[in-house]
Length: 116
Length: 118
Image (tube, rainbow over all chains, first blue to last red; front, side):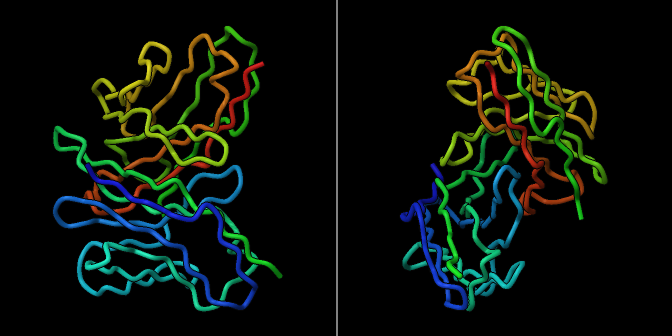
């Protein structure tokens, strides 16, 4: 079964510093990986995805993620954190749910707090 | 960009009553919609997958008679929590896949519905 793991429940970073939110995956076959962000009492917003190609993927709001096949990781990064980046971040993997249908399997989420 | 409208945003109901939550794709057609449940400080748990014009596929452990899902058109799916109880209180989120996009495309999410059963 496809799965992702987010080892950190919470990440704290000072404003202006680089941030990293970790994600590792376990899949059979080629991985299709996504990052989403959730603000309080809101749905999820898509940040970026890796399907194939360059290992460094650039996404919305200055975020990027690096796909590392040997380490089975897909960490989310940003060079300089903003207070407004404080939110809940989810890593997800596309998984096949049968009958030609695909779904997303989410990690447990990592709460990012950017300290002014 | 693609917009998914979920209504209502908040609902408080009495135990034993039923609540309907709507999920609409506003500017695209969605053959597939997903319903998730999210507990405080936890991840999203997929409840069911609904395909337009057919019965929903429920995940293991989700009571299909309690969580009724209808996907009657390409732009609307509804989740009805029947005979709600306090333990059904949660944050429910829908997402939709644009029928014109591939399976690698991101899903579009609604803003969620906070259900409180008293």
